[in-house]
Length: 77
Image 1 (spheres, helix red, strand yellow):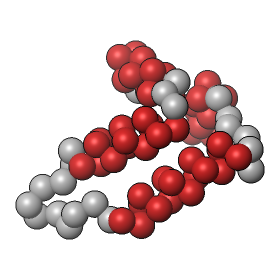
Image 2 (cartoon, rainbow, N blue to C red):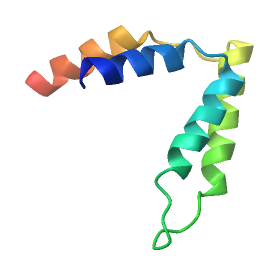
Image 3 (cartoon, rainbow, N blue to C red):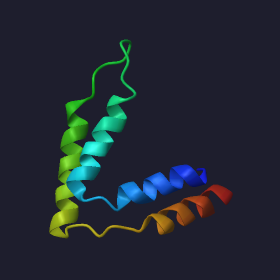
Image 4 (cartoon, rainbow, N blue to C red):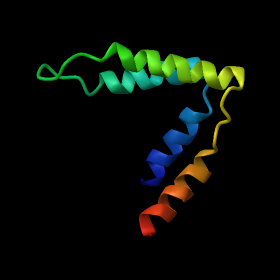
């Protein structure tokens, strides 16, 4: 991931849950074309459920830096 993408991601992760949901929906919609089916409503349900889990403390968020570093370690073997 280049630094510009990482900056955008960091800014997006700092947004409130509702704003992140809207951002995800807008990004997914940007991939829609006439030859693809429309945005699947089940994704909206997953996003809303997971956002609620974060808000209520049912799950603990993992900082992006930890996720990124863990993925890089796994990719290296």
